[in-house]
Length: 172
Image 1 (cartoon, rainbow, N blue to C red):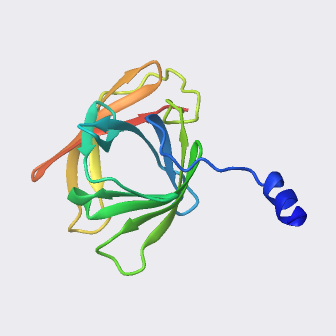
Image 2: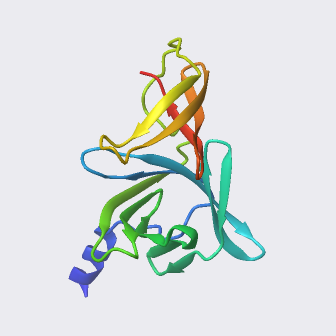
């Protein structure tokens, strides 16, 4: 009995509740770390997530919490995040459901409001660019429109088949 008591006293109790508020998520992809912010909130007695991307907000309402894990389905992209909850951190995978065995390492930290880690510089840049997707004769040309505010860039790529909006980044 004494041994069990001593072992129990030395263990750190982990917090497996998903904290409400802002998080910063990172996906590890080919040596890079694309990041995004999201908000966890309680809505109509359910826990929900809102993805933040520039001025765009995408509400996800089918969050699943089981014991020490969370599943965040992103139905419109046919992807999901599966992660373990450990206090103010999440660790797990970003999964593309439509590709066999496609799992990328994922982590998130609670309370981090920034998205990009660089300290942007305000570098004078043109607002309009010619964009080329590809190098072959079938490449697609588009127009890139960007705005800058203290080193933070936002923009849109205009194509003949539709726009790629809510682009966001920084100058370094």
